[in-house]
Length: 256
Image (tube, rainbow, N blue to C red; front, side, top):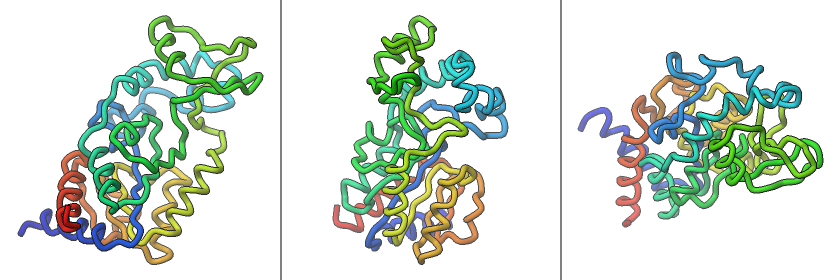
């Protein structure tokens, strides 16, 4: 049996035997769906723009057009994207009762499209938008489609700028979502990290929080992470290739 096969079998065994397993995902799980990530050395979005200029709350309040001009291609890619095999593998694990929740840094909604039911979107999402003036909350999809057809700043009837419910730099994460995610981390005995470099706080600390109370880690990511040395299984490979193989083995072990 190859080293990879041994790692796949071990990961599947951990998930099959877990009392409470949770997943944590980052941008790397959605790049196979055509959504660019932010920090890859050659193709990351932050290599092309200053995040504090185009994606900070302070900048948005002063010059929202900078954000909307920057986000247009990302919004188009997100709207057109479909779940890839990695998303579907996590949904299959949840459907088989082997994964209790997914904590994600992504705003694309692809976990839900793939069938995952319990998803903590700690960096927000694109389903809703909030008026910066009157705080009215409205569905974002019609706004995004109109915005992509005719570039303009989405506005509320009161005249205020409508901001998608995504977390910008300098903005607080949604407290209720973070609290629910932290509770799942505290309850878990296995955490599967997929497609995250574990560089963005506070999410980057969640696997450490799990390890600190005795949980075992499975990490599937192209690049190394700061917790590779503490993980039970580490696979540096394509999540869209690896997660389905883990899920298939785990579900088979479970009698599925």
